[in-house]
Image (cartoon, rainbow, N blue to C red):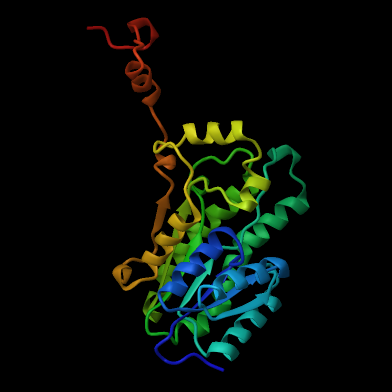
Length: 277
């Protein structure tokens, strides 16, 4: 069975949980039929149930995006089920904190394979379907440490930096085919997965919040809203861009500690770096 011509189709990798599922929920609200892909059948089943409970039509395909043959099979399933593809969201990712000197070759390959190779394999395989769409869009999910330092995430940081370059390059190459390619750069977001892999204690959460000018973590829904904008007609003249959605984290706090100290009644003397009156 194929979609009616009026219904667009979006494919979200890593779409069963967290940010990916939130993206699927908003696109379903906008009338998209969905395809979600993940290595985990359990994640796919739970994500599909949640999406279908909202009335969405959902195709699930177990896929390891590091494997080109599996990605090709995924796109074939999308074509067979829906007959079209309008939006690809490359959200599948892998990450775990580790010092660079302790990172094994297998650990490096696993994360770079999912994030960088997977984004390219999915984009390349989706190209024949996307160029048939009237207004097609790819959104890649990256992170601020793609252009800043990423201590403890050297594998993911390097891979995300590659995805930023891939985003810009494909935007130029594929503009003539009517395919826009952009990226969203989330700040810290709490999900079931990130709480398990990254934000493993409340003291760490508090330290992360101190580094965000807006003073809090983002939500999956806030990241999804940015994707919704980039694939919408409101962004039809935007391509090759990276949209940070991070509460200002990538900008840093600069001298905010100085102002925080002043607002709490403290002062900074000239010999502590202040300016004499």
